[in-house]
Length: 320
Image (tube, rainbow, N blue to C red; front, top):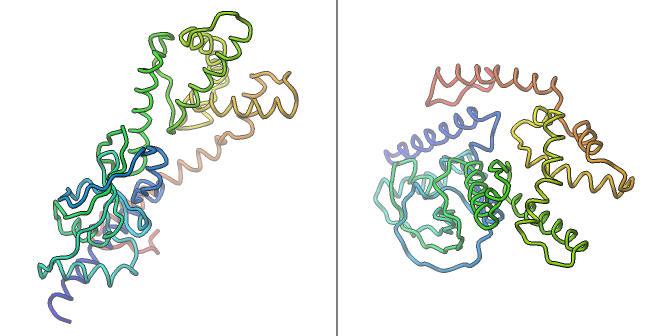
């Protein structure tokens, strides 16, 4: 084995071990260590146009995901599998010998980059601490500007925050209702709420000769539809049964569930009945939450012990 081959093998093993440690540390929440899929982001951001930008020098730090190889690398672009070894080492050897490789190809969306072609080159560049790389860029245009995320959950939070700003700004919802905590854990919910308000406005107009204003419809929907359900959700301690969810989340789910019940059993089904039935059917039991918590604590202790023993070496699976 020549010197370059020995070096590339060592480089790959270090990178692979870092990916392995990262996976172990996020065993309870694997999505936090996963490379971001371009398709997942496109579904949430919904770009409006595609524009060919051409050749650019882009910062490696802004490359956060991949179009097709997001399962092969972790969220820091370290290789997750040994089957990537040969190609990864060839790219690493080219870097060691200062051999120029073709530019990578990327999509740019909301200020972030996703690899179309050249995932191994990005992985090697990140492992070697390279700051910039040549890239052929296609821009997927969107109004949303995203800060660099660590994982998909970071992007989800940023998109929800953007959607909330737009909803409150365009409808005046906060000023009309003096309610600033209409929050959700998933994107797209503010559009659902807006459609609920428009539907409520439509039914209000059926009983009046003069067109109801959007402001009046918002206030009526808030007082007559949202708040009674929010009160029922709070009174029955629903959030305790649905960790990491919001009153807004439960409102959307329960309204949908209530509609299903009314289709099956008639319009006489009350909202309180829908709330109780929904909780009974979908809640996470206290026993299950306690067991999950115990598992988390035990696994965290095992992980801390393993990583403390050898931060550069893969843990022995037998010790888990």
